[in-house]
Length: 217
Length: 200
Image (cartoon, rainbow over all chains, first blue to last red; front, side):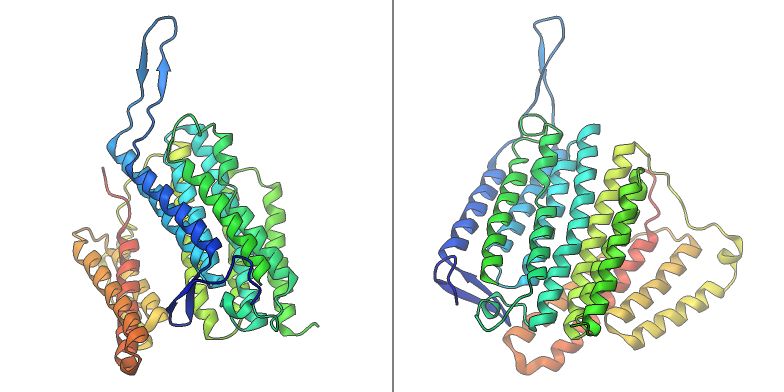
């Protein structure tokens, strides 16, 4: 096995789905875990609006139900990220990545403002289109090599076609477009903070992990 | 080079490509969503091309992810365009409200679904229940259905744990999983059939 992320430290077996921890994946896993805990304990940012023509300003109230929804989506996104970081199965990886995509749509769409909703809708369309190359890649890996286990695929005897790898990267790119759309709706400082940080973090993490997977295959 | 698998793959990707081409010309948001869903179906075709038992196991999560994103996006579309939810109560077709035909068709579908068992059977039986609920504009308490769905799901998961940790009890686990998924799909689909939007 060519060791991209270092030698695997230990294995967790669920039937033929083996979750393995290398120094690389452990680092990414811990990063996702730490940020999920941050999201769990943090409070939403309250936007300050200045009343025009006077000294007055007022803070926008965020209702409890909206807060709960955003927090739930961010935590779900964190959990999906953790899963995508450590899984040792190509199809599981694609599933976790598409779950990250859905959660990111939820995080962006939780802000009830028309232009943010527009951005969320456009991102949702991209994420939905991204699942096509993602699942197609996993299916092609299974069909050409007969296995989905990354530990099996890492052996030198098995060759994964270039098209399958390219499609996998394309799919992850589609799902990881969230920061672009969040930035488009000016969300980082404005509505949705601090939960929007999960969008950026999850995209970064899935890109880092897919690089490892591609080098491994 | 050009064996059956490659040809199938080429056809599936061609379908996705045609859908994507239509997408570049479309300007309406709702139609974009429908076209994207059409493109997404091509990925199910690619998974189905594996052609083994594994294909069936992989299509299910693929389908679920697609439906989840479709539901989320349609909800966002409603909020974005500011459409209100209008309560609709059933189909309101007099013949279907009175005649015994829906009962007969639903019973047939449910019985056939139970004989088939598993996911497909659950789908067919669920379709029967959906049809019955739609034609009778049934309104009532769905807590029992939700509970049944939850319990059958727990049964399904428990059966999988038996597969993993007590492989010698595989027959029990198989029956548990089949029954669990049958009940779950029936109840989930009938919940969908009953959701016509309630006045808020």
